Structure formats: structure tokens, C-alpha cells
Image (cartoon, rainbow over all chains, first blue to last red; front, side, top):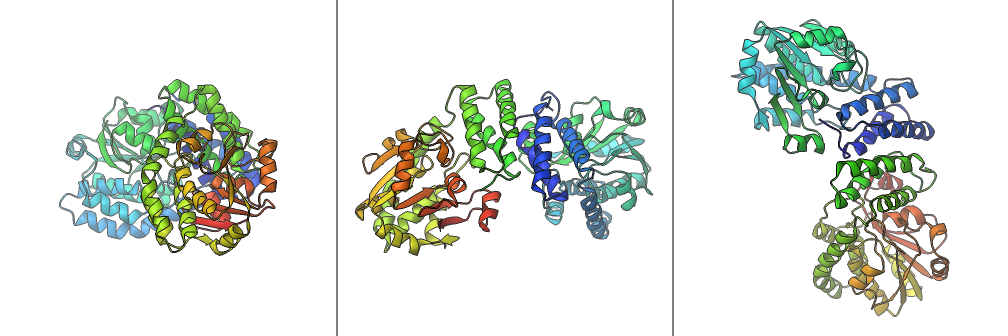
Length: 281
Length: 281
């Protein structure tokens, strides 16, 4: 997916959100903002927006010498862990636990501080369980899960990872070998190994990192180890808009589970803003 | 009012809105967008956001050799003229026609293509007539009108000008000499002399231009003739957020009539987004 000019205001909005986590010093804020303008000025619009946001968040962390989202990630993991028992009950009591867990994983994708500053988790859960998905390739997803041995699960955000845990628990209970992928180092509110530990995922399945601080999965910036796992997997479950932006069109058996959170991606999909998506590549 | 970093994404959003009026050529759009990034990079944040938006819209018109808002201005004037007879009836039937006309002038300020891409005029009219204003200095405004001889009326947007006409008609019916001020040349959807002609305002009162293409009223960029009228006026009625940004704190008898359309201005006022304001300087 290419970058559209509608992404440019959003790049700056993300910068404001990141700055709001760390500093209210007007001089520092303006300095970072103007540094980010230079980054955006060099945006290669033939590449996905995730390229530019990767550079932006790298710049913000470098200039401020801090990770803007460290604390909020921890807090959202705790909030989501508080919801875990009731969500788990929804899965257990379901006639189709795999489907319920997949829908909850999509619901959890509402947690995204790149785009939202407040989050309606419960509304997102109801919507995912009670309304039809906007793209629903579940039947094919279910077949693919049953045929697969090695499943690579590309995680997305903190908080959301607890919802992913529910789906991964279903996959492992079906005897699948699941490898969950975190980022190699902090970027935005994306999960790293620390989040996998905090939320109990690390005890459930293999967790590897992709060797990168990129938004989504920008293949040439990932480690050889990750690329090896990626090519060997029978099935890839890809969470979030960043992974969709960067992996759509890749010649692998990928299912994208996410919410379309911006006009550009919604238009790309021909769906409404906020659509819930379970889509085969 | 100074520029906040929250204004930066909005600068780019305004650029996208302007480009959407004129071209869907991705190369041209990217070229303009990147030129605007350079303009924003030079923003003097000690000055109001209207400074930077003035430079941005000037740049867009220069690069594209066209006025992005010419056609939509004409259309919105026509739409508002269609509403004029029923709005006029509301003023005539009111117990306090000056107040009703002032509130309608504030209602009309919802028409603003710098900020919105669609407009709920009727909702805005109901809200202005049926709900309390968020800041309501009407009692003092009324006294000031009765005491004034020369009133300078700083117009804002196309479409909105028809709502201003209703207030100006009340002022002239009270025997006041009203001079309405348009922009010297096109900028955004701000009115020029053409709009005053199209909407019948030119036959009602003196119409002068401020000699400038600035958003709001940036005094040092206006003509000597305008500055002379400004200093001689007993009362200045200032429409819109741009004029508020650039004239707040000016040592004159000014009443600001507008809607707070962005978080930055709302926060500056300590009011909610969307608040309707009739405020003494």
C-alpha cells in the first residue's frame, strides 16, 4: 500500500500524541515537531505510510531520549488483563470458540495510541461479537488453521496482546505450534518481549522478536531469524493496520485481523471507517 | 494567540482540503504537500496560526495557479441565499431582532472549508437560536451598538456572509453607518468583493477590502485605508476564528462572533469544542 497525502496530517497527529505522553515544554515540542516535518518531507510515497511513521517514532525517541509509550503500554496491558477472565468465559461458552477468539482479537485492535487517544474497549468487544465483520473470511481461516502446523502470529499493540492471547490459546489447544512475534525494540505502543512477559503470553507459546523497530513488518529491516520463521510458517496471522499496510500483497498464506482505523486504509479496502476485518491475503 | 503544535496537523489537513477541490493528480498533490511542509517548518509559533495558514494558502494558489475555493464559495452563497427568506422571517418575528440576527451570524460561521468538509447549517441555526451561547456578552454588545455611529464589520466566509447580511440589516435599520470588510484577494473560502456583490450586501452598506489575502486580520499586512477605517470605528464586529486569533487582545471596542472550531482555540477560551461565542474583546 502506498502513502497518500491524507497520511501527512496523520503523521503530525501521531507526533502530537507521542509528545503529549512525554513533555509539555513548548520549546521541546516545537523542536521535535519541526524535526518530524523534515522526516515527512523525505517520505517515499511509493512505500506504505508505516515507513514514514517508523522514521518519525525513531526520531522522537532519539530527540527525547525516551520511549513515549512505555508507561501507557504497561497500563493498558493491566487493564486488558483485568478483562481477560470475562473474555475467556465468552470464548469457553461459545459454540465456535475459534471464531469468538478471532473476533475478540479483532476487537482488541481498537487499542492503538498511534490513532486514538481514548479507547472504548467494551464497545469494540460488543461490536466484534454481535455484528457481522465487514470482511469475513472466517470459513477459510478455520480451514487454514486446521491444515496448518506452524503458525506465525504477528502481534500488534500492548493491551491488544491479551486479546491475542485468547486466540493463541485456542490455536495451541488445537495442537498447533504457534510462534508469536514482537518488535525488536520499542516503537509506538507496539509490543516487545516485555509485554509478552507481562501478559503471560511468553509462557504459552514461543515468542520471538522481528529484530526491528518498524511499524508493521517492513521485511528488509527485520532480522534473518525472523525472515526464516516467516518463510517457514504454513499460516501467518497478521494483527493491525501497520502489518496490513506493509504485508498486503505478500505471496504467503496470511490472514489479516484488524480494524480499519483511518480513511486511507478504509478507502483502500472499499469499506467504512472502523470496519472490522478478517481477510485472507 | 500563539501557534500550538496541535495546529501543525491541522495545517496539513487544510492543505488536503484545498487540494481536494482542485486536483487528483498524485504527483501534483505530493509536490504541493511537500512545499507546504517547508512553509510549516518556518512557522513562527509566537504568532497566530492564521499567519502560517496565510502562507500555506498563498503557496497553494501560486503552485496550482488557481483559487481552490472559487466555485464552492459561489455555491455556498447560493445555498445561503436560498435560506435567507426563512432566516429573515426569524429575525422579523423575534422579540429581540438584533439578538436573533447576531445569533444567526454566529450560526453562519459553521460554514468554513478550512476546517470542515461538510456543513450542517440547519443544525447550527437551531443550536444558535435555541441554546445559550457559551460566551454571551449580548447585553454589552447591544449597548455598544446603540452608542456607536460607525461600525466596522469584519466578514469571514462565503455563505456565512448571507447570515452577516441579516445582522447588518438590523444595524442599518437602527441608523448605524456600517462598513463591511472583505479580503483584498482570494484566500481559503473568505469573502472578497465578488461575494458581497453576489449576496446583495454591496447594495446595503459600504464594502471595503482590507488590501490583503491574509487569514483573519494581520494588521501589518493590511492596507493603510483599512487601518484608517479600523482606527476610526466606534465598534468593530469581528466574525470567525481567524479574526479572533489575530485580533484578540487588540485595544479596540471589538465583539467577536464565532464558533470555536478547533481544540486549540476552544482550550484558549476554556470552552468546549463547537462553542458559540459572542465575546467582548
